[in-house]
Amino acid sequence: MGDPQEPYPRSTPPKVGEIVHLPTGFLVSKTQMLDIAADARVVYVGETHDNPASHRVELEVLQGLEQRHPGRVALGMEMFHRAQQPVLDRWSAGELDEKSFVKAVKWFDDWKMDFDYYRDILLFARDKHIPILGLNANKDLVKAVRSKPAEELSAEEKAQLPEMDMSDIYQRGTTEGLFEGHSHGKMQVEAFLRVQTLWDETMAETAARYLLSPAGKGKHLMVMAGGNHIKYGFGIPRRVFRRIPTSYVLIGGTEIAVAEGTKPEYMDEAELPQIPMRPYDFLNYLSYESLPKRAVMLGVMYEPTASGKGLEVSSVVPGSNAERAGVKAKDVLIGLDNEPLIDSYDLAYAIKKKKAGDHSTLELLRDGKPLKLEVTFLPTVPEQKPEKK
Image (tube, rainbow, N blue to C red; front, top):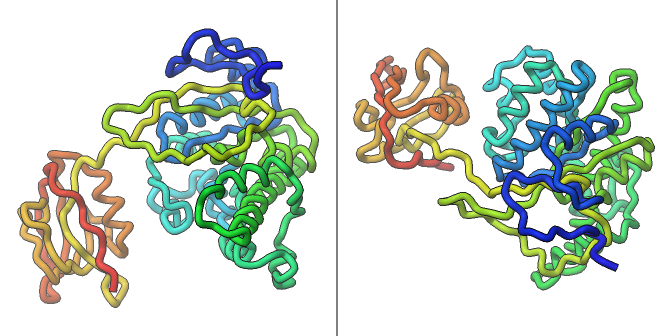
């Protein structure tokens, strides 16, 4: 009888901005969704990593929980792993500015997504001193689990493993479906299943340990992760419940429209099995969007100097802001607006803060002698990537 994923199908097409309570099929307001979610000990929010609309839902849920339980909310994030916890603690305590934080957690080395997707969420957490948990497994362990089965792991690697339940039929079916029709052998399917289970079990273990700890006593935990870790509940939620039976709510989204000028990348789900469960308790209908395009660029190709201090210009893009300012090849960029340029991220971060019409002072060394150039930022050609030796 009916569809277990949508037991009460809608009689009218969904609209962007609507929220449906899937167990009943009734539309609810954002306030109603948050009121109900706030009653749960754990609120899981499944995201589309590269959709700003999905991250706005996460921010609204976090704000709603903090409003209803001030000082009693914690945030668990897939994007960080356990080894980064000391940096996350300093961020939540307000001890780090954005640039220092992004560099300290090696954001672009580990997560690689544009920080702009997560900035508002993380700034809100810092401003409200909301504890942030690095839920995920450390990178070295993920690499080891991907490359070899459990019996071949070293004693040190085995000691880092959470309790691993590899028997979930829905997770296996989903994994096999993702690989169906692709040129991947059974060994690669098993490797991905091991890693997916490691991610889910580690995040579940981290969340459960916090809820059971003195720090987590009386706290409401929001967990944000990719939809595949939360959807249908067999990923993180069920594995948390196995460790600590407690109330929880699943919130997610589905893209039903594409914003003009946006080119989404869809995962081929043609071979995925039909899971006989509702994907979420509350489903938000979203539009797929892109981040605003960067307003200005500098227009240089560069690489870090051998000394590790400054960026040596290998070439200047014709017609760029850099060329208009007088930057030349072999110049060493050492500062912008009195902020030192030590590595590539320093320059990328500084330029990203600029907008058309801004004026800046670029400090550099030319033939070993210090020089200051005035740069006026106008819309120009895309920034060139650093050259690799």
